[in-house]
Image (cartoon, rainbow, N blue to C red; front, side, top):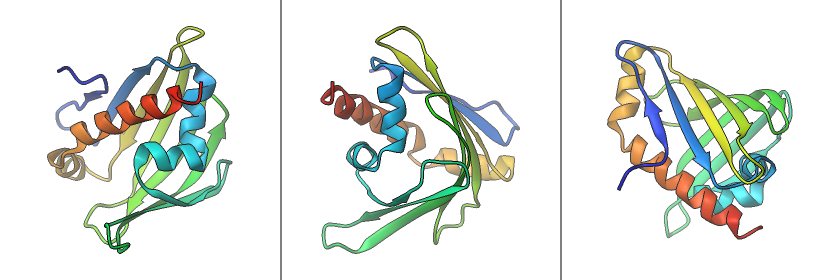
Length: 155
């Protein structure tokens, strides 16, 4: 089965571009990224903080079945334009991966479809390659599939 989420990782660069078209109106796609209750559902993680505004911060935690936190992610939102773009940092705590910079652009395709384009900039080409060796592509595609399923239930 072809993955709907596309990843463009050009050789020797320290960034990659992720695109995904959704069968969702733009306002609902954007809400899926900024409303904690929706984020928790499609990302299967706890939203500790999500300040969807310029200079806001965010923190997510993922726990094992016993309730032990196994992963913390956090960052700062630098730019926030509703239904258009979010610029933020992303860091996974207690991992060897450095902070990355993410540019998310949201586009209306039709009244019922929309698209998100994410450019992720890593500290170095080597850091990007290390991230790509993780089950990154499959994981983001699965997360985007869940996003679409969760948000369609809101319609």
